[in-house]
Length: 65
Image (cartoon, rainbow, N blue to C red; front, side, top):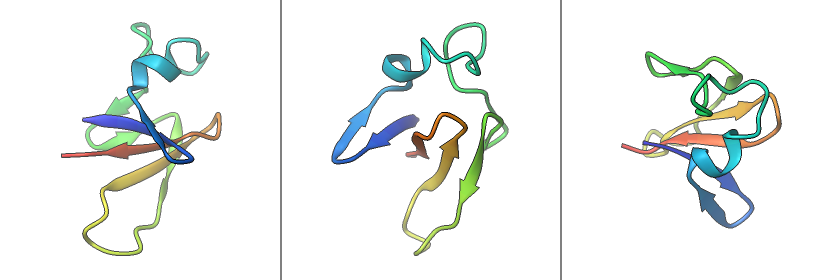
């Protein structure tokens, strides 16, 4: 499940990506095969952290399993 992390808050991608010009046709992040195509990966500090990405709009996206 993808979530958007901002400061001390967690948002569903639908709340943030709907108005993004880089989102797919349904207003979701461009997520395919475990990668965010509208952003870049952020290095993990520990193996326990979920995969995180920074989108081109500056938001942090995490893949919570």
